[in-house]
Amino acid sequence: MLLYQPEGGYCYNSDSILLYGFISRFAPKGKMLDVGAGSGIVGLLIGRDFPAVTLEAVEKQPLYVEFARRNAAINGIEYTLHEGDFLNHAPHGSYDWIVSNPPFYHEGSSRSENPILHQARYNLHLPIEPFATKISKLLKANGEAVICYDARQFAQLCSAFESAGLRVVEVQFVHSKADRPSTLVMIHLKKNSKAALTVLPPMITEENGEYTPAVQAIYDKAKVHSIKCPNI
Image (cartoon, rainbow, N blue to C red; front, side, top):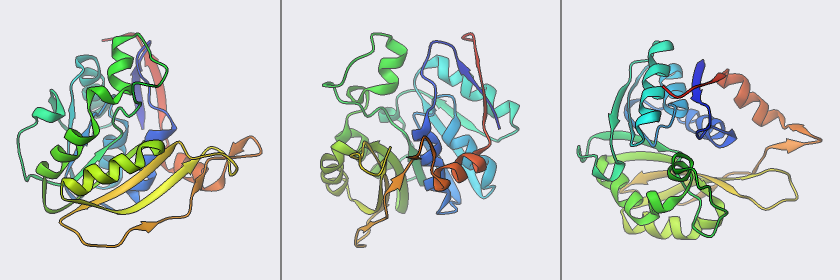
């Protein structure tokens, strides 16, 4: 897949590729919403690989709306893109799946003064509790969601999701190396579920200076060729 990204703006990283791999395990179908689409990477990969998905996305930064639309057109992927704030997205009870790599850095993190980067990175633009509540409202009665987030905020996430009627049913913590703490967690949620939590084996991304076989397999499946270009 060819993906254009803006020079000087937020560009996708390994979080998005790993999230795509995690979502792929469920072979999703039905109506899906990609929240905070950015240049479109996560939703477009799912739309490419799973034709049973009817793909929509929501993105509030006009620059990324244009890049996501261009990327969908170039790759021939049917795509309905809503420009606006996710928290104002209206069709409640509409989606079988919601996926998201949202802004998740907290305000204690080192900050970027670039306003485009700031909106893409920091969760003050999409706080945990309203994020969880909105996901629950937009999902169908037995809908599912998959997100990635800062692992250090996992406790707050679980509390917010449970309060919103979303059960955390599966998690996988990502570690850059086997002896380092996790900084990323991938979470599978179900609405109105009473399922017990499954904690998957940790995903280690690097070993001896290279991607581990599991991570390399996800990159090989994604097959993304990225091009940075001036803002549209």
